[in-house]
Length: 198
Length: 392
Ligand SMILES: [Zn+2]
Image 1 (tube, rainbow over the protein chains, first blue to last red):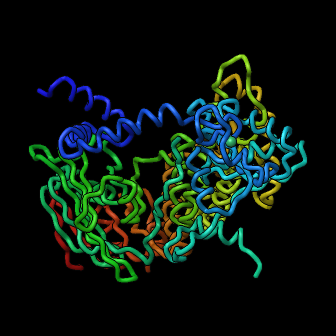
Image 2 (cartoon, chains in turn cyan, orange):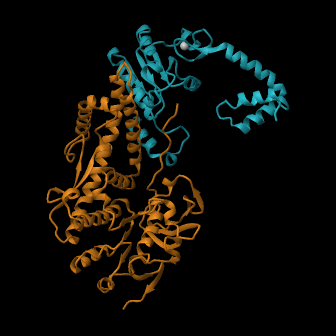
Image 3 (cartoon, each protein chain N blue to C red):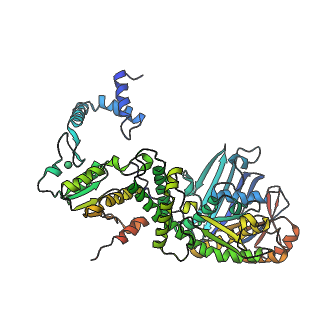
């Protein structure tokens, strides 16, 4: 039914996360009609991104291919503090807040034996190497507050115990702008646990 | 990576005693079409065998638990010749809230509506009508698998303490993850620190579960003993014990002590578990033990004793739910009187007086005389039709 080239485009678009068969057809059609101007820019951007973007060999953050990330090379940043996150976008989110001037370490996942993810799969050995090489004084663990995120945090804390450095975990509690009567009881419990003195 | 951290549903958002204001049944077993408005208090349903008394209670069971207490297959509950069976209840709560719940079974499938909205996650509708049941043929609470007793108790725990869903979910997740490590068969063997991280999680959630279970049991136990004493022919001292696979006697132990002994048991079981590929100790292996005169009721109790124990336990659960949850469940007792002598019949009925709503069936005319003075309303079930009987 569809011309072969279009069929191929739909076939590839369907592989994108969150895009179903109908969506893929609509996007494909748009790209070759109304969006034709976007298409060539998109295809350029796509090949450039694939060509040029890679992961920092030290931190695992997004950066130019084959280079260390600016967060690590910037001499004004504190290499003795590492913030450990699950994925590269978590580092981006924390970086956006502009309040952290240390460096990042992207695990690339969390421990989950059910899904076959072991400590060796998530760059924990690399983290330990950094702790030694950069004379790290504090590791801040910012994994997600899930069962796997918690266990991964505890595992890392355990592994780092013998190095005598500070290991902390991001506090959990009420979101800014959130209303207490809308918060679930677990959030309130955690917020109470982590309350601060005024 | 998936995060199993979705907001868990609060399964006990309903407070205040629940009352069935109206029951509407269509093509449910032998009940072709019936609609009644049962009053609060004791509703006595009288009728000869096979007229549909038990079917009526089972229909209420469907509204409460979204499944029959008896049928193994859904289609068995549809009246012969009909396309679908349907049970609809109108509920009123003490706080003024009303709910309309309907369950339709057609073509082996179930369709549930709550206040006009279709429910796809059935857990959301289970317990909207909170009710406890006694069917004399069902002694599985005593004789069945230990998991059945745990589930019964856990269901009550979550109703009593809604936030308990979290430790239960946590425990289940940690157990699955831990078992996945135990099942791992590679040369590297088991990574001790990785195992410890999951074990700690298992222990933390598990200890909360053990504590919540035993705390609730502490409330249920005296009531159970009291009800059993009153209705059993041959009392003997009955007890419900919590047999922990990790902590021996639980009562009086602090959280820390429980954690310590759970961890120790895990360490002790480690070698065996690595061979078996699963976790062998923990609250998922604990047991609720009914005893009489110190002996297992399951192994040494007579049918009569076991039946009395189930009945006493169900009534005790209602007592405790009223006491702590604020919600008193509807109590449905099928043919609970026939095996008791007159003194005990009166005892049982006395203990049911003053309850929000009770449905109790009986088969003999003789019983009717004895009990009619306590009943708020008497119904006769004949060939699937209920009709009110005026007091003699
Ligand atoms: Zn870097």
